[in-house]
Image (cartoon, rainbow over all chains, first blue to last red; front, side, top):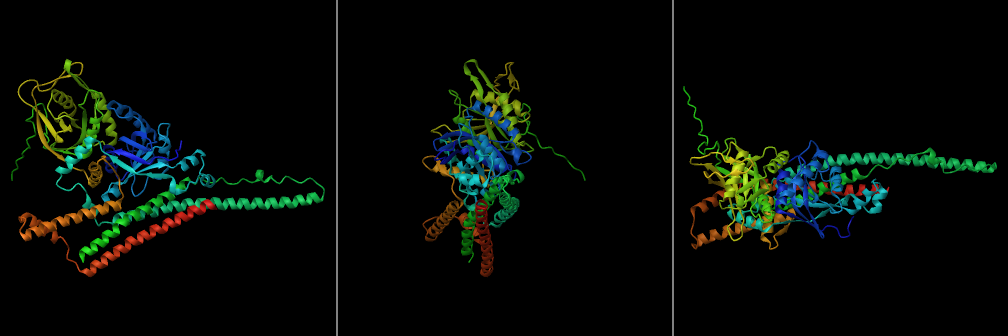
Amino acid sequence: MARENGIQKVKIDANVAFKIIKHTTESAPAGVSGQLLGLEDGDAIEISYAFAFPMGEDLASSWPSSEANKNYASTMTESLTAVNVVPNAAGFYISSFLGSNIYSAQTLDAFSMYQSDEMSSPVLIVHDPTRTAHTASLNLQAYVLSPAYDAVKKGHWFTRAAMAKHGLTFKDVLIPVPVEITNSHYANAFIHSYAETQTEPVNPALHGLDLNIDRYLCGNAEAMLDTLDDLTYDLGSFQYFLRHLNREEARIVQWQQRRKVENAQREARGQDPLPENDWKKIFRLPNEPSRLEGMLEAAHVERICDQIEQYSAGSVPKLYGIRALLQ
Amino acid sequence: MSFIQLTQPSGTFGAGGSVGIPLTVTVHPQVIFSILDHAIRHEQGQPKVIGTLLGIRSDDGTELEIKTAYGVPYVDSSEEGEFRMDMDYNQHMYTLHQKIQPSEVVIGWYSNFSEMNPLAFLAQGFYGERTRPFSPVYLSVDARPGQPFSVQAYVSSKIGAGSIRPVIAEDGSIQPTKTTVFEPVHTILKENSLVDAAGFAQVYEGAKSPSGAAQVISDPKRLQESIETVLEMVERVKRYVNDVIQGTAPARINVGKYLFAALATKPKVDPESVEQMITSHLQDVLMTVYLANAVKAQIDLSQKLVSTI
């Protein structure tokens, strides 16, 4: 059930944030995932607990929708009830590197897996450890599946017509939702006492001013080119389909014209005309390939482009700053 | 030439077969958050929570790094003097955690109380069986209101005569041995990495706000904060130096030396080459942005065209 206003906010506990940070950072650069437990509360989702999934050999086996991880999740959830954790799955988290893993078929599979009556819009939290390390600012993002995607998916086939009908474009497969980290009173007490005992300032501000900007930009540029290759391949196969379609359509038109001429002649001879719709029996129009993959790749490329823009928005002032300093 | 081989005295002084008494225990903030979360989820009428600590022990056993914590249920009926940890549950959870991070092993236990009570000795006995031959580490996280927040690690050693090992009765309960002594160990709270620090900075924002919550903000906003922080630091140093010059503040040699060293790190470079370097970098960055924009426009167009053909 897609709701009118949708989820406006994702509140996560500090404990959850650190569990995600630990898991995604330690297993970098491999893509890993985990489960989020929590409840829907009006227009917000409150995530109160998270646990990691074991890493598989590839993306499919590391993701929540794999058979092994489904078993792991049920065992873990059951065990956690013994220490009073709410056993309600609210979604999942994944690690991403330079925008990878997010727009993948596995991620979308996991979304539909978590969709249930209690959890109408499961949430996805993405952490990019590389980006956090490069900008010294925690890069946690939350997404929910767009209702338009849901509607198209119910029709089982991502055709251009279905996408146009529901207004789905590559830009809105996933809808970003603001993330808020909530601390318990205990956590607040700890944070304050910890901040006091640290000799260095808690704000890792100075790392954020690091001038080593080339590496991240290069990585992004390379990732962009790789994804563009995939996208071009997808567009190529789509164009192949279009050519095929055009050819068949041209042949049908030709056939129809021939039949018309034939019928005119038959009429002149006083014979019954032949049916004009017989072409359906003779010709078969090719099936339109699913647009899903191409759409995901387009969304991936756009994400990388956005990353480059956002990162540069911080890099350019830094460069001007250092110029002023050195002169 | 002759050699003499000296073996390091292994920590056998704490009897009971415990070797390698840790000298320092490093705790990552995330472990504390995990423990505090468990403390909130405590059982009705059982405000004390106990759980297992996983981490990494250095080869000689003198350094410990606590990385993960999870709660373990226990039964405590004080009237009958019975105390039982659910060690099956512990083993089950341990197996589940091993699948995620095989390098982390059981190194001890935690609780949310700081006073030494019979519970602590009993739990230490249970975990001692689990961490043999090492002594289990006990991490006390005391978050009771109205008291300073304290995080302290302890190890235990056995002193005096009597039974060295705790006596385990047939029903699995452990009879306390009165010969256990807890000794505090040097406990360091430290972030693991820059990513952790960034995470901590984020929750610190929340701690400063009255609602205890803070939204995760964008990178440029964070950069602005960084620059403001640095400017404030520079301002503070300037004030201090001015005060010293005017004689209103005492001149401290150490600070002076430090400032000199800091100023000396500014490289002496030819302004022209700097200009050139920065300009070429700027051009690279802007070029990449330009490329990204072009690609974005192209993708937009191609996807629109596909849907209109």
